[in-house]
Length: 216
Image (cartoon, rainbow, N blue to C red; front, side, top):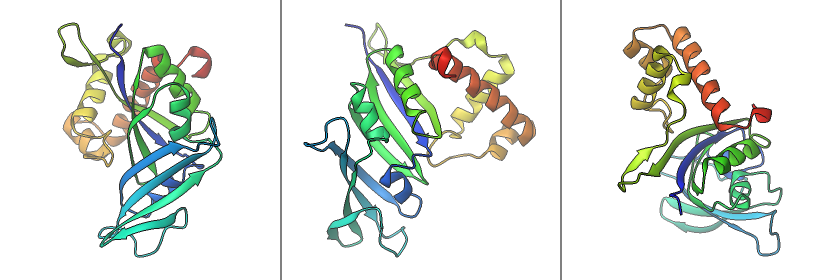
C-alpha cells in the first residue's frame, strides 16, 4: 500500500462553524469534535477550551459552559447543519487528526490516501467556505523520509517560485502569520503590490493543479 498524504488546510469564511466565529474574539486553546450518534452525515458536537488570560472578558454566545478551571474554560457546542470542515472532511473518509482555530480561521490536519482525495476534499470545502488554502502536503518517501509533496514545478516562473518559497520560509502562510506582505516584499526587494500580484498568480496555479478543472 502506498504511503498516504499528510494534509494541512487553512479554511476561512466558514459561517456555519461555531468555533471559527468564536475564535475571532477568544483565544482558543484546543478543540475536540465528534459526530452525534443520532446524526450520521449531519450534526457535530464539539468542545472548545478557551484561555481567558488572553481572551475577551465576555462569555461566548456560540457555546455552553461545561467546565471551568481557573483561567481556562471548556464550552460545548453543536452544529446541526453539517456545513463545516469538521463534518465534511470525515465524510470523505479522512478523520481529522488536528484542529486549531484563530482569528476566524480553521487549520485542519488529516491524512488522505492519494492526491485525488485531496482534490475532492478541497473542492467540497469550497462549497461551504469562502477560502480554502493548502498550507502543507507531505508524504513518506521510499527511503522512509518525510518529504514535501510538490506539484509541477515547471508551472511557475523562477520569480514566482522564489516569491512562494520566500513567503513560506518567512512564515507568511502560518496561522498566525510570522511575516506580513510588507516583510516578504522587503526581503525580495519588490513592492507590496508586486508581491501580491506574484502570490495571487502562484496560488491560482497551485489550485489549478489541486482542483479538478471543472471546480477551478
